[in-house]
Length: 267
Image 1 (cartoon, rainbow, N blue to C red):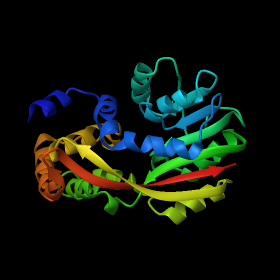
Image 2: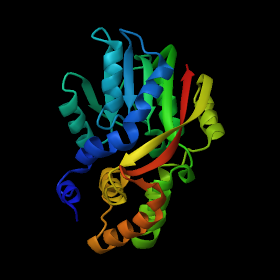
Image 3: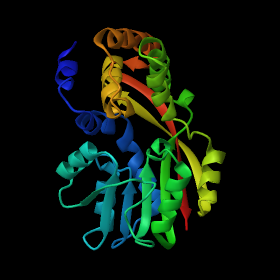
Image 4: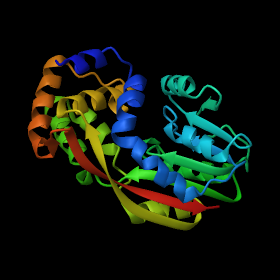
Protein backbone atom coordinates (compact mmCIF):
# COMPACT_ATOMS: atom_id res chain seq x y z
CA UNK A 1 0.00 0.00 0.00
CA UNK A 2 1.44 3.38 -0.98
CA UNK A 3 1.58 6.37 1.38
CA UNK A 4 -1.55 8.04 -0.01
CA UNK A 5 -3.56 4.83 0.22
CA UNK A 6 -2.35 4.26 3.79
CA UNK A 7 -3.40 7.77 4.83
CA UNK A 8 -6.73 7.40 3.06
CA UNK A 9 -7.51 4.23 5.02
CA UNK A 10 -8.12 6.37 8.13
CA UNK A 11 -10.63 8.72 6.45
CA UNK A 12 -14.40 8.42 6.72
CA UNK A 13 -16.57 7.91 3.62
CA UNK A 14 -17.68 11.57 3.79
CA UNK A 15 -14.08 12.78 4.02
CA UNK A 16 -13.02 10.66 1.06
CA UNK A 17 -16.02 11.88 -0.93
CA UNK A 18 -15.24 15.56 -0.31
CA UNK A 19 -11.42 15.46 -0.47
CA UNK A 20 -11.00 13.02 -3.34
CA UNK A 21 -14.13 12.09 -5.30
CA UNK A 22 -15.56 15.60 -5.65
CA UNK A 23 -12.45 17.05 -7.34
CA UNK A 24 -11.79 13.86 -9.31
CA UNK A 25 -15.19 13.35 -10.94
CA UNK A 26 -17.95 15.68 -9.68
CA UNK A 27 -16.84 19.30 -9.37
CA UNK A 28 -16.31 19.85 -13.10
CA UNK A 29 -20.03 19.29 -13.78
CA UNK A 30 -21.31 21.94 -11.37
CA UNK A 31 -20.84 25.08 -13.53
CA UNK A 32 -22.73 23.56 -16.47
CA UNK A 33 -25.58 22.40 -14.24
CA UNK A 34 -25.94 25.81 -12.60
CA UNK A 35 -25.64 27.57 -15.97
CA UNK A 36 -28.81 25.75 -17.05
CA UNK A 37 -30.63 27.38 -14.14
CA UNK A 38 -29.35 30.93 -14.72
CA UNK A 39 -29.50 31.73 -11.00
CA UNK A 40 -30.32 35.30 -10.06
CA UNK A 41 -29.40 37.31 -6.96
CA UNK A 42 -31.95 36.89 -4.22
CA UNK A 43 -33.36 33.53 -5.32
CA UNK A 44 -34.22 30.67 -2.99
CA UNK A 45 -32.49 27.42 -3.95
CA UNK A 46 -32.82 23.84 -2.70
CA UNK A 47 -30.01 21.36 -3.41
CA UNK A 48 -31.49 17.86 -2.99
CA UNK A 49 -29.04 15.07 -2.15
CA UNK A 50 -26.45 17.76 -1.58
CA UNK A 51 -23.77 15.41 -0.27
CA UNK A 52 -20.92 17.49 1.10
CA UNK A 53 -22.28 20.62 -0.57
CA UNK A 54 -20.27 21.34 -3.72
CA UNK A 55 -23.34 22.46 -5.69
CA UNK A 56 -24.95 24.35 -2.81
CA UNK A 57 -21.81 26.36 -2.09
CA UNK A 58 -21.47 27.48 -5.70
CA UNK A 59 -25.19 28.28 -5.88
CA UNK A 60 -24.85 30.44 -2.77
CA UNK A 61 -22.14 32.51 -4.43
CA UNK A 62 -24.51 33.17 -7.37
CA UNK A 63 -27.65 34.16 -5.45
CA UNK A 64 -25.65 36.38 -3.09
CA UNK A 65 -26.45 37.57 0.41
CA UNK A 66 -30.04 38.37 -0.54
CA UNK A 67 -30.67 34.79 -1.63
CA UNK A 68 -31.00 31.62 0.39
CA UNK A 69 -29.64 28.15 -0.33
CA UNK A 70 -30.64 25.00 1.55
CA UNK A 71 -28.70 21.76 1.19
CA UNK A 72 -30.66 18.61 2.02
CA UNK A 73 -29.30 15.09 2.36
CA UNK A 74 -30.34 11.83 4.00
CA UNK A 75 -26.82 11.09 5.25
CA UNK A 76 -25.87 12.86 8.47
CA UNK A 77 -22.13 12.27 8.01
CA UNK A 78 -22.17 13.95 4.61
CA UNK A 79 -24.08 16.89 6.08
CA UNK A 80 -21.57 17.21 8.91
CA UNK A 81 -18.83 17.58 6.32
CA UNK A 82 -20.99 20.08 4.39
CA UNK A 83 -21.46 22.18 7.55
CA UNK A 84 -17.71 22.21 8.11
CA UNK A 85 -17.18 23.47 4.55
CA UNK A 86 -20.02 26.01 4.57
CA UNK A 87 -20.97 26.84 8.17
CA UNK A 88 -22.99 29.96 7.24
CA UNK A 89 -25.42 28.01 5.05
CA UNK A 90 -28.52 26.02 5.94
CA UNK A 91 -28.11 22.25 5.91
CA UNK A 92 -31.07 19.94 6.54
CA UNK A 93 -31.27 16.20 7.06
CA UNK A 94 -34.27 14.81 5.24
CA UNK A 95 -35.83 12.48 2.71
CA UNK A 96 -36.05 13.56 -0.94
CA UNK A 97 -39.32 11.63 -1.28
CA UNK A 98 -40.93 13.59 1.57
CA UNK A 99 -39.32 17.01 1.54
CA UNK A 100 -39.68 18.89 4.85
CA UNK A 101 -40.72 22.14 3.20
CA UNK A 102 -44.00 23.87 2.46
CA UNK A 103 -45.43 23.97 -1.05
CA UNK A 104 -44.03 26.76 -3.26
CA UNK A 105 -41.02 27.48 -1.03
CA UNK A 106 -38.20 27.64 -3.61
CA UNK A 107 -37.49 29.37 -6.90
CA UNK A 108 -35.00 26.69 -7.94
CA UNK A 109 -34.37 23.03 -7.09
CA UNK A 110 -31.22 21.24 -8.22
CA UNK A 111 -30.05 17.64 -7.86
CA UNK A 112 -26.63 16.50 -9.02
CA UNK A 113 -26.12 12.72 -9.19
CA UNK A 114 -28.72 11.97 -6.55
CA UNK A 115 -31.90 11.01 -8.39
CA UNK A 116 -30.67 7.52 -9.25
CA UNK A 117 -30.22 6.70 -5.55
CA UNK A 118 -33.81 7.41 -4.50
CA UNK A 119 -35.98 4.30 -4.07
CA UNK A 120 -38.80 6.05 -5.95
CA UNK A 121 -37.50 8.60 -8.46
CA UNK A 122 -40.99 9.62 -9.53
CA UNK A 123 -42.05 10.51 -5.99
CA UNK A 124 -38.85 12.51 -5.48
CA UNK A 125 -39.50 14.47 -8.68
CA UNK A 126 -43.09 15.20 -7.68
CA UNK A 127 -41.82 16.49 -4.33
CA UNK A 128 -39.32 18.74 -6.10
CA UNK A 129 -42.16 20.03 -8.27
CA UNK A 130 -44.34 20.63 -5.19
CA UNK A 131 -41.84 22.82 -3.34
CA UNK A 132 -41.15 24.98 -6.40
CA UNK A 133 -43.04 28.20 -7.05
CA UNK A 134 -45.13 28.35 -10.24
CA UNK A 135 -42.64 28.90 -13.04
CA UNK A 136 -39.79 27.63 -10.88
CA UNK A 137 -36.81 25.87 -12.39
CA UNK A 138 -35.46 22.39 -11.79
CA UNK A 139 -32.17 20.89 -12.99
CA UNK A 140 -30.79 17.40 -12.57
CA UNK A 141 -27.64 15.55 -13.60
CA UNK A 142 -27.50 11.75 -13.88
CA UNK A 143 -24.80 9.54 -15.30
CA UNK A 144 -25.31 7.97 -18.72
CA UNK A 145 -25.11 4.19 -19.13
CA UNK A 146 -22.22 2.56 -17.30
CA UNK A 147 -20.53 1.68 -20.60
CA UNK A 148 -19.81 5.41 -21.01
CA UNK A 149 -17.59 5.28 -17.91
CA UNK A 150 -14.90 2.68 -18.48
CA UNK A 151 -13.56 3.15 -14.96
CA UNK A 152 -16.82 2.20 -13.27
CA UNK A 153 -17.57 -0.46 -15.86
CA UNK A 154 -14.28 -2.20 -15.03
CA UNK A 155 -14.87 -1.73 -11.31
CA UNK A 156 -18.34 -3.26 -11.49
CA UNK A 157 -17.06 -6.32 -13.34
CA UNK A 158 -14.34 -6.70 -10.72
CA UNK A 159 -16.81 -6.33 -7.86
CA UNK A 160 -18.95 -9.07 -9.36
CA UNK A 161 -15.99 -11.48 -9.36
CA UNK A 162 -14.20 -10.58 -6.15
CA UNK A 163 -16.80 -9.09 -3.78
CA UNK A 164 -20.26 -10.24 -4.81
CA UNK A 165 -23.37 -9.50 -6.81
CA UNK A 166 -24.81 -7.14 -4.18
CA UNK A 167 -21.81 -4.81 -4.31
CA UNK A 168 -21.74 -4.96 -8.11
CA UNK A 169 -25.45 -4.19 -8.23
CA UNK A 170 -25.05 -1.16 -5.98
CA UNK A 171 -22.35 0.22 -8.27
CA UNK A 172 -24.21 -0.44 -11.51
CA UNK A 173 -27.38 1.15 -10.07
CA UNK A 174 -25.54 4.48 -9.95
CA UNK A 175 -25.97 4.48 -13.75
CA UNK A 176 -29.57 3.22 -13.87
CA UNK A 177 -31.08 6.45 -15.26
CA UNK A 178 -28.82 6.60 -18.27
CA UNK A 179 -31.53 6.76 -20.94
CA UNK A 180 -32.32 10.34 -22.02
CA UNK A 181 -35.86 9.62 -23.22
CA UNK A 182 -36.73 7.80 -20.01
CA UNK A 183 -35.37 10.72 -17.97
CA UNK A 184 -37.44 13.20 -19.95
CA UNK A 185 -40.53 11.07 -19.47
CA UNK A 186 -39.95 10.87 -15.70
CA UNK A 187 -39.78 14.65 -15.51
CA UNK A 188 -42.90 15.16 -17.62
CA UNK A 189 -44.91 12.60 -15.66
CA UNK A 190 -43.93 14.45 -12.47
CA UNK A 191 -45.53 17.60 -13.91
CA UNK A 192 -42.53 19.46 -15.30
CA UNK A 193 -42.76 21.27 -18.63
CA UNK A 194 -40.28 22.68 -21.14
CA UNK A 195 -37.99 19.74 -20.41
CA UNK A 196 -34.61 19.84 -22.14
CA UNK A 197 -32.03 17.06 -21.82
CA UNK A 198 -28.50 17.22 -23.15
CA UNK A 199 -25.56 14.82 -23.00
CA UNK A 200 -22.13 16.05 -21.96
CA UNK A 201 -18.71 14.51 -21.39
CA UNK A 202 -15.99 15.20 -18.85
CA UNK A 203 -12.79 13.41 -17.85
CA UNK A 204 -12.49 11.81 -14.42
CA UNK A 205 -8.95 12.07 -13.06
CA UNK A 206 -7.46 9.94 -10.30
CA UNK A 207 -3.83 9.57 -9.22
CA UNK A 208 -3.87 5.85 -10.10
CA UNK A 209 -6.24 2.93 -10.70
CA UNK A 210 -5.48 1.72 -7.18
CA UNK A 211 -6.65 4.95 -5.58
CA UNK A 212 -9.68 5.06 -7.88
CA UNK A 213 -10.71 1.65 -6.51
CA UNK A 214 -9.93 2.50 -2.89
CA UNK A 215 -11.73 5.84 -2.96
CA UNK A 216 -14.83 4.54 -4.73
CA UNK A 217 -15.08 1.45 -2.50
CA UNK A 218 -15.10 3.64 0.62
CA UNK A 219 -16.44 7.01 -0.53
CA UNK A 220 -19.25 5.96 -2.87
CA UNK A 221 -22.59 4.28 -2.23
CA UNK A 222 -20.65 1.13 -1.33
CA UNK A 223 -19.03 2.66 1.74
CA UNK A 224 -22.09 4.70 2.68
CA UNK A 225 -24.26 1.56 2.76
CA UNK A 226 -21.75 -0.41 4.81
CA UNK A 227 -20.32 -2.75 2.15
CA UNK A 228 -17.16 -4.31 3.57
CA UNK A 229 -14.41 -5.45 1.20
CA UNK A 230 -11.86 -7.69 2.85
CA UNK A 231 -8.17 -7.09 2.24
CA UNK A 232 -7.69 -10.13 0.01
CA UNK A 233 -10.73 -9.27 -2.11
CA UNK A 234 -9.66 -5.63 -2.32
CA UNK A 235 -6.17 -6.60 -3.49
CA UNK A 236 -7.63 -8.85 -6.22
CA UNK A 237 -10.08 -6.10 -7.22
CA UNK A 238 -7.28 -3.53 -7.50
CA UNK A 239 -5.18 -5.86 -9.66
CA UNK A 240 -8.04 -6.56 -12.05
CA UNK A 241 -9.11 -2.92 -12.40
CA UNK A 242 -5.51 -1.79 -12.80
CA UNK A 243 -5.06 -4.18 -15.74
CA UNK A 244 -8.33 -3.18 -17.36
CA UNK A 245 -7.64 0.56 -17.12
CA UNK A 246 -4.04 0.63 -18.34
CA UNK A 247 -5.13 2.22 -21.65
CA UNK A 248 -6.29 5.23 -19.60
CA UNK A 249 -3.12 5.58 -17.49
CA UNK A 250 -0.57 8.23 -18.39
CA UNK A 251 2.17 10.30 -16.81
CA UNK A 252 -0.44 12.25 -14.80
CA UNK A 253 -2.26 9.18 -13.52
CA UNK A 254 -5.62 7.70 -14.47
CA UNK A 255 -7.95 9.68 -16.75
CA UNK A 256 -11.12 8.21 -18.28
CA UNK A 257 -14.16 9.89 -19.84
CA UNK A 258 -17.55 9.97 -18.14
CA UNK A 259 -20.83 11.07 -19.69
CA UNK A 260 -23.93 12.49 -18.02
CA UNK A 261 -27.33 13.78 -18.97
CA UNK A 262 -28.10 17.30 -17.75
CA UNK A 263 -31.79 18.18 -17.72
CA UNK A 264 -33.59 21.44 -17.00
CA UNK A 265 -37.33 22.02 -16.72
CA UNK A 266 -40.00 24.38 -15.32
CA UNK A 267 -43.08 23.92 -13.21
